[in-house]
Image 1 (cartoon, rainbow, N blue to C red):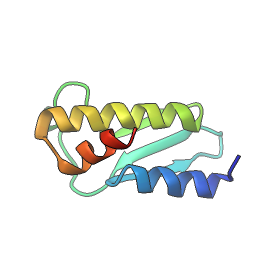
Image 2: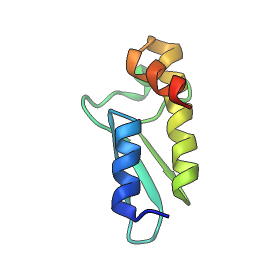
Image 3: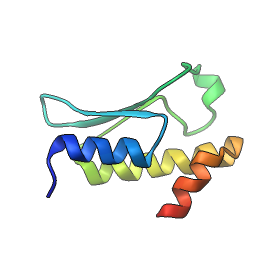
Length: 85
């Protein structure tokens, strides 16, 4: 298993537009970078920040967000992400 820094770097490379970190309490977090979107601008199910108990669960949350991003806006980066997994 890789260290936390490597896991963070891998997630941020796999999911551009997200900043990832692990808290002192051991939870994994990711928040969107760039412009802050209002809740009504995100649409149903899309969020600015996600958290999880472990790195695998965080990856699943980010994949779900990428799918929603693609459905809402057809972002190329999200489509590329979905094709990788």
